[in-house]
Amino acid sequence: MTSRVALVGAGRMGTPLCGRLVSAGHTVTVCDLRPEREPPVRALGAQWSPSVVNAAAGADVLVTVVPGPDEVSAALPDAVFAALAPGAVWIDMTSNAPAVARDLRQRAAAHGVDVLEAPMGGSPDDAEHGRLRLFVGGPADVLDRCRPLLEAVTTADRIRHMGGPGAGYTTKLLINLLWFGQATATAEALLLGRRAGIDLTALHGTLADSAAGSDFIRRDLPALFAGDYLRSYGLDRIHDQLKVVNEEAEHLGTPHELADTVARIHRRALDRFGPVDGELLAVALLEEAAGTLLRP
Image 1 (cartoon, rainbow, N blue to C red):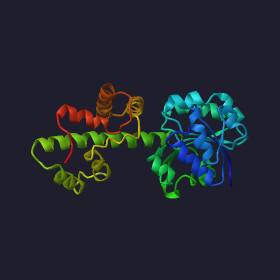
Image 2 (cartoon, rainbow, N blue to C red; image 1 turned 45 degrees about the vertical axis):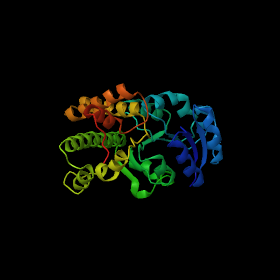
Image 3 (cartoon, helix red, strand yellow; image 1 turned 30 degrees about the vertical axis):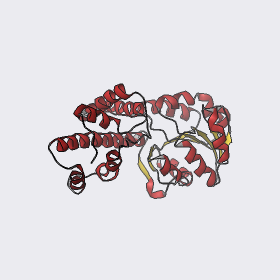
């Protein structure tokens, strides 16, 4: 079945998602605060509305793909939920904060709107080619209803139902914590190895094949060696997400010393470089401190 979809957010991820939804036969109306996003959206075959409420009017599905919790909250006054069709579903694909989402979920429910969270793992290229991973939280029956739409943007095996409300957001945050933690730990190890006189290429290959091997070492480290700090996501957003991880750990009473260290390193990187794109700029900070670049 095809749906009338209101898509909020036409950025690096929202635009390719829009294209896939249109290609699957859904009627898509897009809203974004930036009017310059209208031409590329219309070129994909979607409609455009400068108003979120107007975009949501009569829609079966509301999809939000915005930078973070503050943008989700700002984009969704109660009037948006009230404008949706009876029995509509809100799918939030933002890397949201569980505490922020709880309030929005309650407001949506007050208007009879079901809620599914599906934060994404992957790049804009993955979004364009249907390779995203979706970490879903929410009722299983709502996910079953939404599977045909979600399978327009990725394959069935990449849709992971993690549990009830909050489980999807938390899973994405934990993945980010571990990835950025691996990046900083690997950088420290490589800087030490290089200072000790070990060839970086040899060390890279050995680590990749060892018990310490990881997807970061095998897949992402070559980009760093080439001088690419993966400028596809904002350092300020990274810091905010790591901060939310620590807040959740504090709230739930679990240890978070390492998580706090990873967040503090990224806070220093943010102070040093500013809110610019670069997923590996914390590594650049460590390189500066060591006085050397990680280049074979």
